[in-house]
Amino acid sequence: MSNTIVTDHALALRLEHAEALANVASIEARAAVEPHAGATWIELDGTFAMFDGPRSPLTQTFGLGMSAAPTPTALATIESFFSSRNADTMHETCPLADPDLLRLLPERGYRPIEQSSVLYQPLSAASHRDGEQHGSVRVRVINANEIHLWAITTSRGWGDTPHLAQFMLEFGHIYASAAGMSGFIAEWDGEPAAAAALSIRDGVALLAGASTIPAFRGRGLQTALLRARLAHGALAGCDLAMMTAAPGGGSQRNAERRGFRIAFTRTKWALANGGA
Image 1: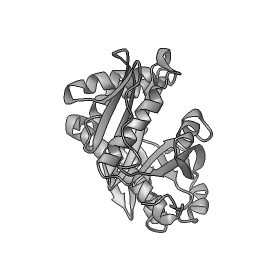
Image 2: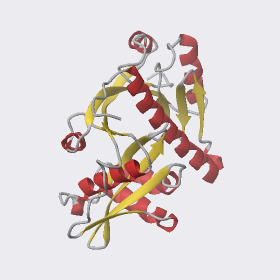
Image 3: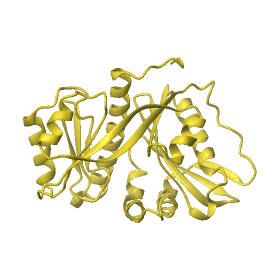
Image 4: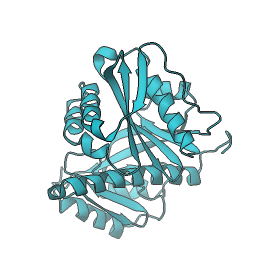
């Protein structure tokens, strides 16, 4: 893929679909390990609705309005999927989705609660080789016996966001074992200091889950993790990488410095089923 990619509906659909499939794999991993949790998903006209427990960040939809025009009937079906599981309905929408969403969602009582930047860059084995390990930093892909270590490291890195830290501590070992997922650990002088994940779907390398234990921040660990994951994805045959970040935040700035471009900004909409 050349460096002249333009942000259009085709690119947006590919990115949204890749993330949806990665999250489907996570839902299925949880369902296999903890069937009592009720983790499940449905697909309706290209929209993926996922339930992973009321508090999980995966409990929402992906791809709403990307493959088909939204309708009140479809939205009602999705809302029933969540309300029957005592979960609020959340949609994370792309600005290149059907414009009727801007009318339908407010009419049904949704409100915007969050935004995120979706970034991308082309990949090739020639341009994304794994960099040499420098000084005290060493990045590696975890093995099957290190999934618990990965979950603990990730959780400690999210210590300043308590609900995410607890989520990763409780469920990180499940998601690190999902199909298509690879966990990465960055060590400082042999001590686990940062962690991240990479999911490969349809030629897209989705970078996610990056966190650094506070005591090790500012030492280039996230840069090392980013380079290692891009190289891993390129060697696996991916031609595109993507990630999400808070608009204008440090993660977005770091990604842009390293070749990522902003594709679009998504909006998360919430409908409280209890009427709030």
